[in-house]
Amino acid sequence: MTSSGLEPALTSPVSTRPGYVVVDVETTGFSPSRGDRICEIALISLDARGETVDEWHSLVDPRRGTGAVHVHGITSAMVQGAPVIEELLDDIWRRVAGRVLVAHNASFDLRFLRSLPGSEWVTETLCTQRLAPAFLPDGRWTLAACCERAGIPLFGAHAALADARAGAELLRFYLRTGVSWEEELDRAARAPEWCPSGLPQRHPRRR
Image (cartoon, rainbow, N blue to C red; front, side, top):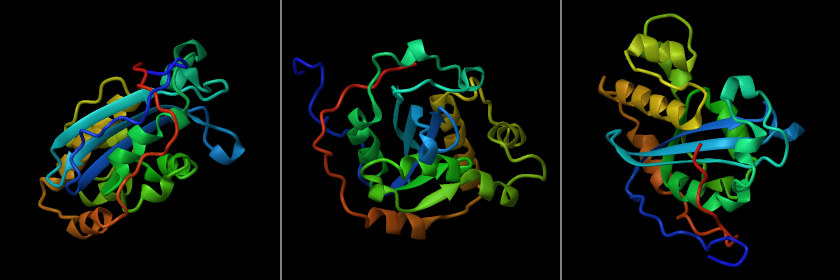
């Protein structure tokens, strides 16, 4: 650790075999183009069968107010002293590179991920919300509603790790029907290999 408290890029324990990474972000608002930022992020790496390989999450200092505290429960005090997003890029992108990125209402998470340096590692994506009508009875398509119909417990909704875990279970529910995304997995695995950002990195801050 340096005198500033920053650390060099961490070595990756995550398998580089083809698979998925389920992401969830909690944010200060809806639009990164208007200055909204990530205040919590979770990533769950899965192998090609949907089995969990690795879990990672962190609070993030958005360098502004945290927004709708009544929704995500993240106060300004909780993110004080937490890493800023640039200090977590290596942890984020080494999990995304070479994998199919999965999220519920993926367009929301992608808006924020694609605003980050290194977003070229986001290649193939799946949205568990858009896929849901093919696997679940008609109804609402929120994460909570989909999980309820799939028989998946969802505790602590709107915390990034809890929502990412629920998204991973939802993907596994789809995979158990025999569906295959082999083409997407193959294309993602052919993406450029991850390389460190070169920026000082810090350990994640847990909620």
